[in-house]
Amino acid sequence: MPPSSDSARDTTPSGTGAPPPSRLTSYRDSRLGVFSLLLALRIVNALTLRTFFQPDEFFQSLEPAWQLAFGQTSNAWITWEWRTQLRSSLHPALFATVYRVAADLGAFCGLNLPARAELLLAAPKLIQAVFAALLDCYTWKLAEKAYGRGSRTALTTPLRSFGYKHAAASTTEFEWSSDSEVTDNARSAVLACSIASDRLYYEVWTLPPLRFLYFNIAQSLAVFYGSNRADYYITEGLPLLLTTALPFAAIGIWQSLHGSEPERSPMTGESSTSSPVTTPTETAIQRSILKRLAWASLVVTLTLSLISHKEVRFLYPILPFLHLIAAKPLASFLPTHAPISRKTVIFLLFATNLLLAGYASQIHQRGVIDVLSYIRHKHETRNGLSASSSSTSQTRPISNTTVGFLMPCHSTPWRSHLIYPQISAWALTCEPPIDIPLPERSTYLDEADEFYLKPGPAAWLRSNMESTDTIQSGGSRSGQHWMKNDPRFKRKYKREWPQNLVFFEQLEGTLKEHLDGTRYTECWRGFNSHFHDDHRRVGDVIVWCLDGA
Image (tube, rainbow, N blue to C red):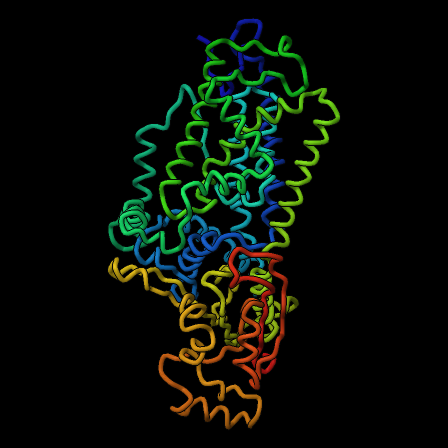
């Protein structure tokens, strides 16, 4: 019996069953080259990304990781999911390790604080780039099992992932093998590590997947963050996820379910008669792979459609499957000697993808990232933490910089971008009605809802912030200091006005009216978006500074 190989097409005409050593070496070199290219592309993508996508990419990974790495006093924002044990600690534990290594490396190299801050910003991006490159590489290896080693279709598959800017957000890996399964011992080891990690993190025995199902399904808390119609994933989710690959994926699913024979032409463009022979068993395996992936994609999509709370990112685990399935119709549409009309269509589709990726990764919602860089650099300047100063001279106390975010909750990243614990910041929250009976949940409003809806911005500011008399532009500073400590102006549970007030342009008119005559002046404005599905986030991101602080 010939030895097994990682390719479904390793049979040679000589009948020996094993490829010559030179071919194996060449193939290993090509795999390394492909992975190196994918890794380079992912690193460039990660380090040049300038926009905001989803709060969870920060608050469900980097924030708990920051607290794990730097302690309770680091001022990381820990959301309600972590307080109720809904998340596995393995993911943030990985990034916590990355943070600690980056911090220790910065200290060992004698970097000053601003340079260390930049290193801490880049470190999780780099490790995520490695995950994404591994996903791309294993998607390619799976494509070779489905379409044959060296086929144009297999090579097309990983390149599809660069047509959508946030494909790196999903790091799920899947490699199907006909002769190898993950052993029970390996499964048990992973489960044991997860349970032990959660025990150390939460300090109680808990199983987050079960608690997640209980809170989000049994208690329907996920609906609090929005619900969508049943056809959302079909009519909006998949088109947003696949963009120009959608028609090819649809055709590929149809062909896979009906057992169409996989494409055979090798990457060099040779005819099928000159390509290596594929046995009926290998052909059956290839068809089985495509059929399984097609069914998995359909079942996942339809199952998630039964849940009221829907988000495009929930489909990310099947994105590599869909790219693989779409590769065959795409390669068939553009054969080696394709007519100019087809080449033009592919060029236009590719250009459209590039434009969408560029706009989404460099322009749309960049203001909420840029504003944190502004706050961080301003804090460094106020405290003399210049890039030219040495780390050994930075021993004097660092004064606080206060920031208030009058935005919908989680509109910006948090400590992973603010970095310094001396930046004292607060923002509107959106805690779900965990302990509120079901009949009362329909009228429940979180803090952000109260601010925007009832009682509204002006009334909320009067009820929750100090009197504006404490920050009036007229009068002496000593008199204003006295007023801040006068019981008539300073009441319990009311917030002091921060040095920096951050908000979206949509709120500018309201704040101008409420803070008229105060010492607030605009000190920064950054573009955020040309359009937005949330009217509260429309327009630029603006910073008002108190006394130009």
